[in-house]
Amino acid sequence: MNVVVIDYGSGNLRSAAKALERAARETGTDAEVAVTGDAGALDGADRIVLPGVGAFGDCAAGLRGLPGMIDALEHNVRERAKPFLGICVGMQLMADRGIEHGVHDGLGWIPGEVRPLEPADTTLKIPHMGWNVVEPTARGRAHPVLAGLDSGAHAYFVHSFAIRCESGDDVLATADYGGPFPAIVGRGNMIGTQFHPEKSQSAGLGLLGRFLQWDGRTE
Image (cartoon, rainbow, N blue to C red; front, side, top):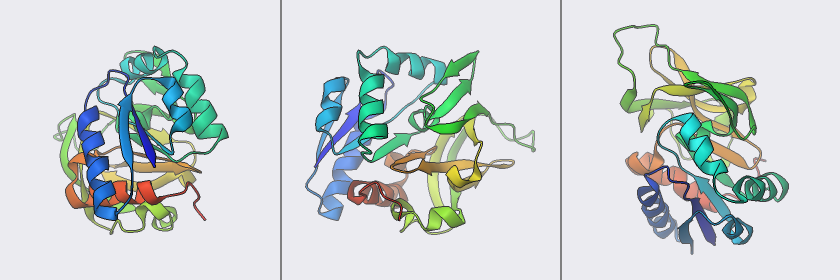
């Protein structure tokens, strides 16, 4: 299995790749993980991972700055239906747009916008940073990648913005920080986590392992 982690200058790529390699070992999956900004590599990939750290607009610009990358993503993820995982801002980029220092277009795969966290409790600090409980939705509990994610599992978050999905069907798990927000979203062969699975110990490694074993189907 070839796993491509897309390098578009967003940082945190090596830790994501190392976590995927460890998840492959622990699940007995024969996987080779490559970190690359070469759009052509996606044609030979079996799994595609888009991490992301920083501002939505900067990450969107970095991704579009890679020659041919948007077309390669559309071809391999949307047309060929290869399993795709977005992490943190990589998950947010799946949305239609992000509202951060202006309006910036996303990939348009999950209808919705990425907007600032606005906790009802004004004493809560932004960014939301640290461990928080992830609660799968009814739809999420039936998803193969979430099959081993127990209710009340903890994951590690670092973010100031969150996706607001137009359809509740796209929300596979939530977390709460002065109000609920999507922690995992998914549609078809695509899934994304607002938290960092590579920093989320056993819960994160388990999710990565199931992603590697996932064929992209939800039924």
